[in-house]
Image 1 (tube, rainbow, N blue to C red):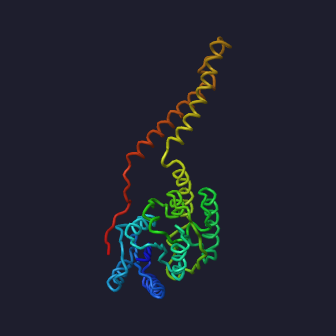
Image 2: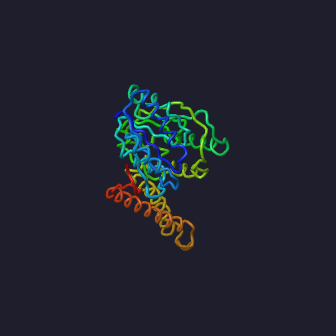
Image 3: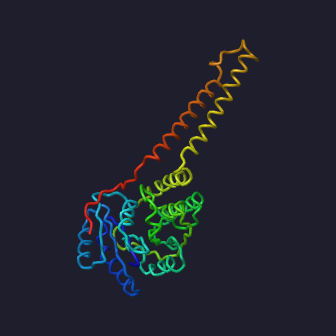
Length: 313
């Protein structure tokens, strides 16, 4: 199979059939052997019914239905697990991603040998205040923090080699950082393609300004995990050693001063250096304990998907 097209969605009943028809037209004109996997992330409209109808009429259409709304990352995780194509395309269901871009993305993976190609919506039809400006700030911070030089981390239109999606774990809210996860897994040949952005045709966006707040918090998380996720003791142990050293230096100073330099002076407990020493040693010990606990959790953790599938076709 050449292509697996994974489409997460939430309450997009108006656009599903139109999107399928558009994708099918592009696939047939290029002679691709393909599958379309719709992941219904807990829709409350007729989205799943439409997916079932399409699946009955078109064998290339498959679907996964979650028991509730678990988020885009979990939807992509389930789609990646089900995908069989040599190249995997992800796109949104709101008709803002253009299926006409798929052949060029496929070529960049198969002929130009990219591991991952991310779309870049250089010209957008979103609100400049609500989306464009926060998106630019977010992408700037993501580039500086991760070292992955992409202009649009949030673009849903991406292409992957099969090996990439089978070797990364997309959990929590990490769908924005799949290129970073891929880079950390050793897939460093990451490209970018300017893609056409469509104005939303039906309904309203399911994402608000809060997604950028969560995105920045996730950016901090993934930055930490990429550097210390497999060796938490290197982070916590280093800070623990610094704090213990500071505490020991103050304690040594207080001891020498009291015993040899000023034995008749104030009590040690009346001096601020005593509390600095005590606090530093306690914090240092806690950092060490956190590091040990992190190592124990890392060595005993069992990965599990954080979603429940209600139906699958």
